[in-house]
Length: 194
Image (cartoon, rainbow, N blue to C red; front, side, top):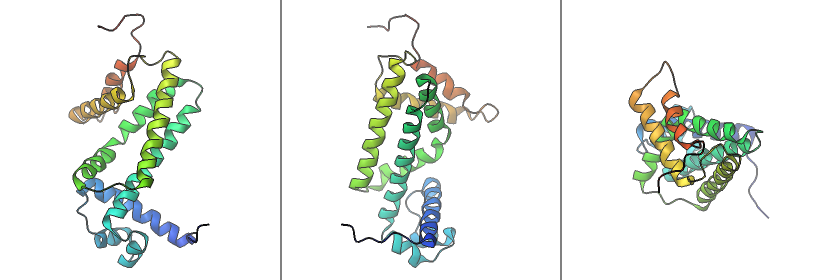
């Protein structure tokens, strides 16, 4: 039986504000942002931040975990869509569309030397499993090539993000990402090279 009491409404709001502020700060500046600065930007006292997140690593990990959980929820929603191919590609485009923040967080995480806890590892596993289901469903529907796996798709998503950033086409956002993602579509009977 858990002895943790649920957070009061004001404490939940403060925690959410701290996470939102930390997400933006870490994305823009990396993990070097002091906890007191995050508190100032969130409009709360340093003690409030330290009560929720005793260390910067714990705050950073909470941001990563929340992000992974949001992606997994979006993937689960996509699984409920009637048209598997459209849902799959819409999920990828949504990921790429807001990936500037995600990429910065991923870059910061890879350079931070933080050991991820069980909660974060579980959230990552949940996302991988849900995404694999989404991919398999789109492949079964004939909307995604059967010769790709989740690792291939991840590399292609990174390529789409890079292309979009290189071009910086603000007049037509997502155009290059869509072009890159088109390589995942079946070739209409053309066999891939051996």
